[in-house]
Length: 139
Image (cartoon, rainbow, N blue to C red):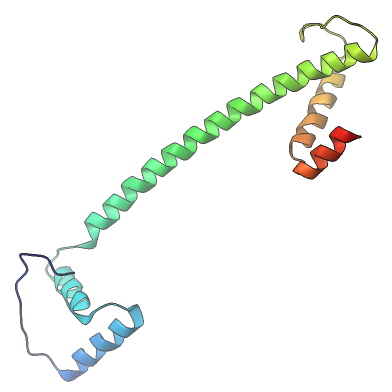
């Protein structure tokens, strides 16, 4: 990771240090010069990775915010689906009784227990695989 304004610094070190750097370079698949540069930066208190880590952290924060937004949207869709399913249950109930006018979902056609049961059944259906949905629709 040489930069335009970098200068060359030389030092005499024992051969075993060089061997260790070369071994570490092979293990990490990085150039020896990068490892030496990183070791020197750590020794004098400069962390070259901090800017990279900070930018990654910022990206994670943005991704997390986006995910939170999507969860909120999904919850809204889930609420809308429940409302539509309740309305559908009312329409199906009125059609099964032979009524021709569409009724408001606020009309109390059946008990709260029945509504809860219908909602739970539809919620279970939401989790179905596409082929199960198609099979249920056809039958």
